[in-house]
Length: 312
Image 1 (cartoon, rainbow, N blue to C red):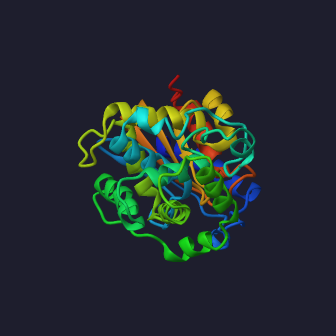
Image 2 (cartoon, rainbow, N blue to C red; image 1 turned 90 degrees about the horizontal axis):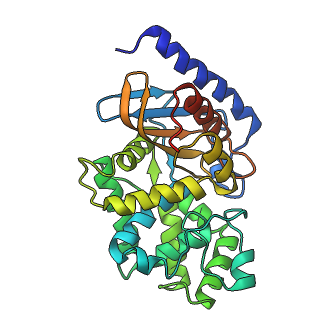
């Protein structure tokens, strides 16, 4: 049983991080995301035996770029790592998540699956011929992790689709350079629908726990090698061009999305009565200029330091 004093320590970290919401704002380049309450902040932490939750962890939002981890695992499970790397590299970039500069100037394949160019390429490589089949390959995988049905927020999807000029430009460059395995519109719509999957903070923690345990005791089948590959990408590329600093100062594999969602993976740690592998999910729609939840990043920085979670 967690003591009142112990809970006060976590509550203090949470309260301090919550104040950081004033230093960010909800994503405005996607109209539907701009409507989010920028003062919201919630945290769910789950081990194999128990859960700690702070804030409203049942509020729904969309996965956004967090889904890139799941898409990568599904595509790689289907094709194998060597085939996937013919189309997408695994190197970090110092560019923004929606940059086209390196694609256009060098005709390079996308640098990694955690940026938009890589994720759109991965969307084209997902199992299935149709948009529906490709989307279903990822939603089915997620449903096995969460043990529940998931839905796509159509309002967010349509908002993203009608404001997707940069992503459409990226997709056409990818097609011109031979890195798409489907039509531009199929790849783009698959990618945007997957970004628009509705989840809550508790769901994020369960996704992170799946990664932390290498899929142990889950119906969602993916090899340990692929899961570890995904976690390595999260460590080096998961937080856009803040990934290097986060790895150096927090030391946890993590992936963020512009909705304010973050997942973070603790391979073997102790946070009060939570012990062993721990999955952490956070939601705070006030994001910084890079695209990461300001409250979420602050919470993870303090949590990692206080509970010695650094894994490198």
